Image (cartoon, rainbow, N blue to C red; front, side, top):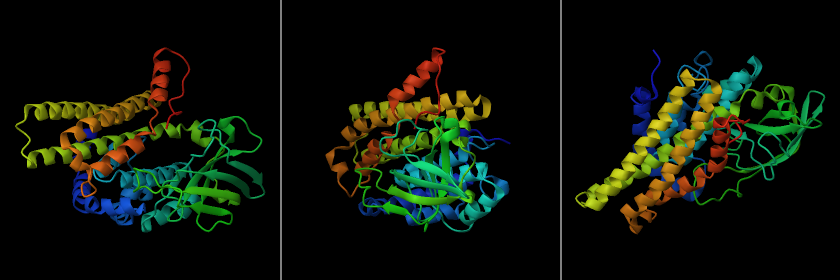
Length: 388
């Protein structure tokens, strides 16, 4: 039987995760923010639940949950659940699973043995690294890969490498020298700790929000990548529309953040006896209604991956991502007015939640989303993978 997105919320695994997030992740969040470090204890507990390889096929040892499987919801609902208390941990979970999913789907048997098998035995957090300064287009990189005997030599400078590569691996995007067509030039290489020519800068990442998702810079200086570490053929990522598969991972985090902030403010209002104030009732009613719409958009988008074409599912996911992001941003203003300035003191989680929300939602790019959707509506050419 295939579960709907809503029914998946009731599964024992997600109920256990919700309890874990509320009772164990939440008390750690302030310290993690102050340290700007990997949330190792949280990730250890996610590994114990099998959630760090949720996207890997069941026959290969994972939970088999991704948007192209019969269970598109479990992985996404897990991100949403964790994001209610720790958006940074949720993003670490998301990125690790995107790496595991791509290697499981695109890799050879030898690559699955080399890279996936260890993820099933011990906690591993990996990175999917496309971001770089001055990138001209999502699939056209300044990081260059030169073909040599037995592999490639790669040179480049990457940023926002969530999780880094030191506790797992990193899939790094590069452009093959001499190729101009992204369907032939875009290359994925798997970087491992200890490779000569690799350097990581942890001090670079000092944001206001999303501090519990350390995202260092990675420098590659004539790094030799053997053929075993080349994932798929050149162009496999854009041709396989992989970027479009990741829209809902971000959506889940945006929605979870909004739900977590709302839940904390609602409980605070009840404890402070503010519930009889008609203006408080009005604002809470508006906030609850806004969240309801965002939830419906998210769960509808998940179900669309089961019933519609890939392009329609991508467009619906982009709409859900934008709806959830805009709802969260609108909600943040209402919540802080309801909660009052004292709620932003460090001893409370609300200030961290709102900083995380503002920082992470910068990924969305509302204008680009709307432009792509508008082009589709008008019958013009568009690419629903060209959006983060």
